[in-house]
Length: 169
Image (cartoon, rainbow, N blue to C red; front, side, top):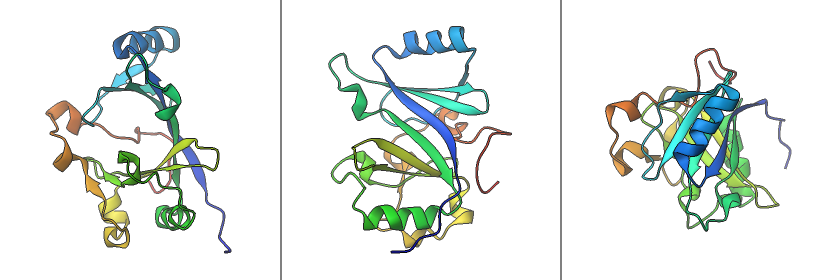
């Protein structure tokens, strides 16, 4: 299988937090992070601006295996090609929420996969409804706002900061 190399850029890093507010305060005080709106995923998260990138904190229980949720996210030059390559390799984690593509209320599309060593990573696409034919993905992307109610502060969330480094904008 011959593929063209992807152009990719880091979008965010997501790490687990056993105490979400304590971790958020830590990164705000130590690194000068600024709190950002985040969607309602049905579990507690906190998104922080870290320069032109984002740091996402994800609440986990005291006994959780923190590596389960830890991931980094990138944007790529060809989201559909990355999807096809991951699907061909069986890299989607079937039977979990990470197996699905998620369309966020902002119109951004995200997919999650595991590398051969089991590391979780995410690939994001800005403006997916206008940039992609969503019918090429099977199963169809799930709409987060149909899965979880979104309040006004959740609807302001975006994976791509103004002036940040990303593909397609």
